[in-house]
Structures are given as structure tokens and as C-alpha cells.
Length: 121
Image 1 (cartoon, rainbow, N blue to C red):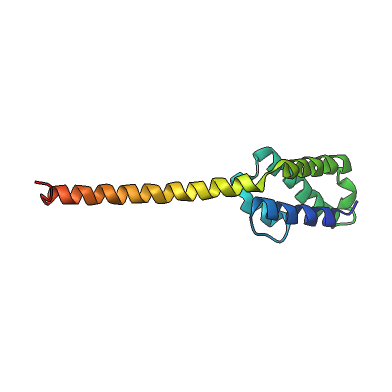
Image 2 (image 1 turned 45 degrees about the horizontal axis):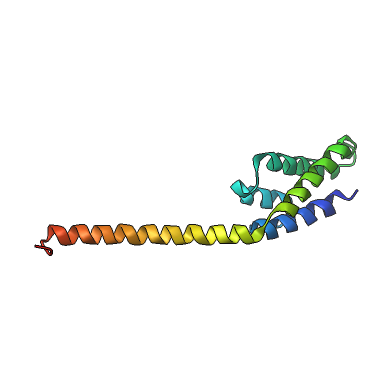
């Protein structure tokens, strides 16, 4: 099992589907933040730690291959279920709601100022 290739593939896929930037799995997981559930962040941490251990010839034997495969399967299953279209729609709706709130606040302040100056008497 080539752990470097596996983590690189997962990082690319996560970066694409979660729409975050990063070159390796560590960057992508740290930038994903709340887009990646806590239990899957722990699975990604298992892969990151295994990759670090595998770089050292003596410590590479300590890597739990079964645990690494399980973590990889869980991350891939999550990415398969993920619908990036709904994420984009939700982000657009969030931005529209924020803009609408700002417009509403500005209109309220403007109305208050006009009432204080006696524009509606």
C-alpha cells in the first residue's frame, strides 16, 4: 500500500469536494474546518500520522495497516455521499441572507434618522 499516493489522492478529492485549498492532507484537513465532521477529522489524522511514521524505515513497521485502510474507506465513503451542488446552493443562500440582513439594517437606520429629523410630520 502506497500511503503517500493514497493521502495525496484523498487530499485532492477533499480539496475539490469541500472547496478548500491545500497541497497535502494536513493542509486540506486544517482548512476544511467545520465542513469535515469531527469523527472524519480523526480518521484523517490517523492517515496523517501513519504517513509521518511510514517515512521512517524503523517506525514504518508500527503503522496499523488495518486501521489505515478503515480510515481511508470511511473518508472515501463520506466523499462519495457528499453533494457539492447542495453545498454551493447553501453558501449562495447564506450570502444572500447576509446581504438581505445588511440592507434591512441600513433601511431601519435610515428610517430612524428620518423619523428623528421629523420627515414624516
